[in-house]
Length: 125
Image 1 (cartoon, one colour):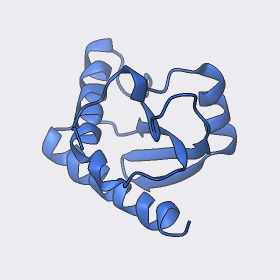
Image 2 (cartoon, rainbow, N blue to C red):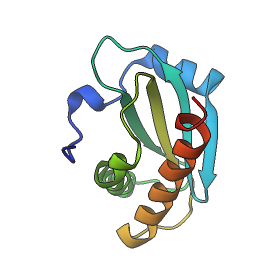
Image 3 (cartoon, rainbow, N blue to C red):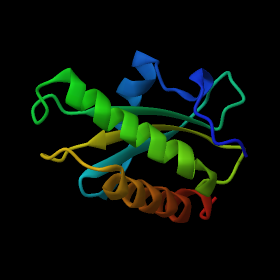
């Protein structure tokens, strides 16, 4: 599997994001939260992902963008942990910490969240 994160894999639909927050399930490894739900996409992509950082804790866009880049990169490198299935999912990673993280802090958290997701959802289906 290629370790890429292209445009087709990004969750951009406002309607899908609203459904995600109203009907989605959550996995937390503080300070990162994954909100996910089973979805249906026209593409052949099995998972569409978005990232978000609270404006409350990080006032400047520079800081928020840096954290979002770190989250996307750690997801990109570890998305191989989620096996390909016939089901499609929408993911939203939320960072709720107060301090600027390092990549070495974020990567194991994202990895743990993805492993927990596989245990909860993929193996039960």
